[in-house]
Length: 226
Figure 1 (cartoon, rainbow, N blue to C red):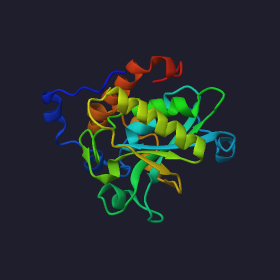
Figure 2 (spheres, rainbow, N blue to C red):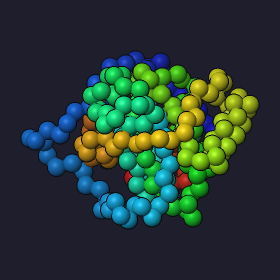
Figure 3 (spheres, one colour):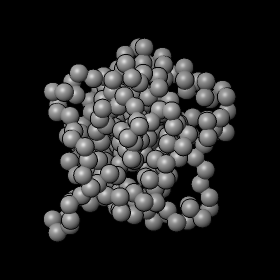
């Protein structure tokens, strides 16, 4: 597995960028966002299994999982904390115990939970505590959630194998937590990467991270992945 490698030049270029500082609600004067294929209804989504992960700014995490075969929808939101009905402003400024997370709807006949766990660990740096790229704070921490004992064992065993292999060069700090509640983020965050390809954060952080994932996990991608 290839690790995400960031040059000093790239770090300097990204220092002024973050998911937090670039987030904004829709501009009523702006043009129409980039269109996406028709989304499944809530009723249709209930036919599929769900998995939950947190690994940095949810704009990119959502895009990564939506590029994976068998994933029907990925939803941006908040999880891992105790506060009810959290808002983006509260979470992004570290005023809650939640992390930015995604809810992944998937077809287990086309992609397994184990494969989604592989996607999770392989698409971010699980060794950086409370940080992912230019985004810093516990709201961007790495968390793998489990809904039952089988999922817990899959996550724990895979993380143990990764740690023992030394593939990352540093200990993994990903939290493994029981899933409780997922709070869907505000609508303007949904499909943000697809709708705002010219956003500076998307261009400089999200798209390079997505492309790195695609390079390393080509066999996991949908044939029509953008």
